[in-house]
Length: 76
Image 1 (cartoon, helix red, strand yellow):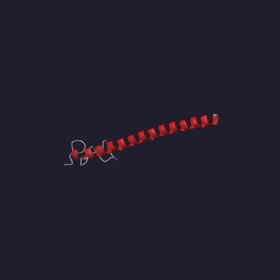
Image 2 (cartoon, helix red, strand yellow; image 1 turned 120 degrees about the horizontal axis):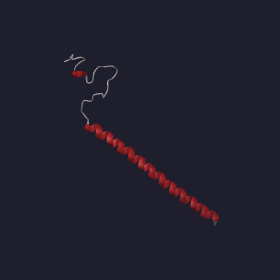
Image 3 (cartoon, helix red, strand yellow; image 1 turned 90 degrees about the horizontal axis):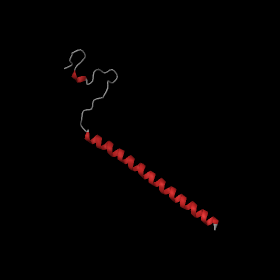
Image 4 (cartoon, one colour; image 1 turned 60 degrees about the vertical axis):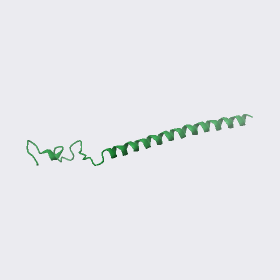
């Protein structure tokens, strides 16, 4: 009788652990998919837009470079 009760308890614990693990995996999958959706929506919203860097890159000059040079000099 004791062996059956122990086996039953173990089976119940395993079932509960499996349910929690499955729930956690499902939540992680949902979060991952939501992040992908957000990235795709952002890419779609900015499709075709000219993107400038938000800082100077490799000493390439002032940002943005099309607006002229230093000290009032213009590249235009």
